[in-house]
Image 1 (cartoon, rainbow, N blue to C red):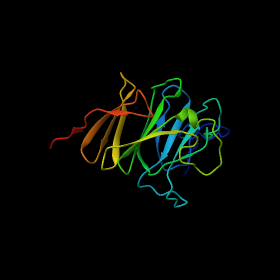
Image 2 (image 1 turned 90 degrees about the horizontal axis):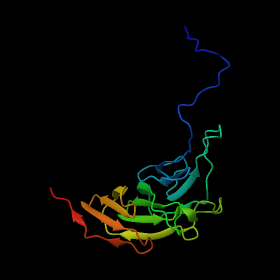
Image 3 (image 1 turned 180 degrees about the vertical axis):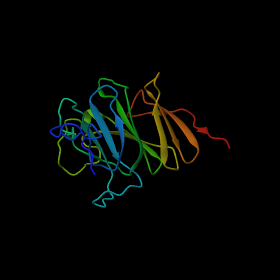
Image 4 (image 1 turned 90 degrees about the vertical axis):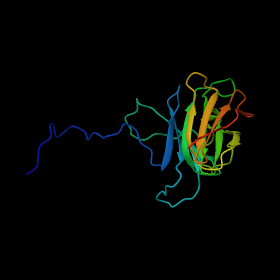
Length: 187
């Protein structure tokens, strides 16, 4: 026999609040209602696409729909993402902070979300999307699987990769980041 669960007129409750159908790694915006997605490395979506992109979606909890609208155009990435972080380092140029992506090829891409949010939607992802890609930092030789902004000094970004190196990047000038001497892991 079946069980009767409460009032039959009650609407079905989803086990989630919002959703977007992507094979992606994600990062929440630290100071605004947005979430970023980067095409996940090693995943295959239903279309068997081999492209990689960064997208930002608007989180509107007042809207009952579980769908999240895209907040701007997609930005093509040269490789797929292992890790995505959104840091609060806001400046006049980067009012929504910075997004850093750890990529399969060992690089760390740095994006300005303010140049993605509100950009045209629907076109093919363009590399840079109006200057959204601020810089590509290349130091690691293996995939970047660890990435984190410093909570006390948000201009500092740590990246770690399979090559065993830990890099600390100073993003005070995001288009020309400086690198502290890399730290090599010991066995």
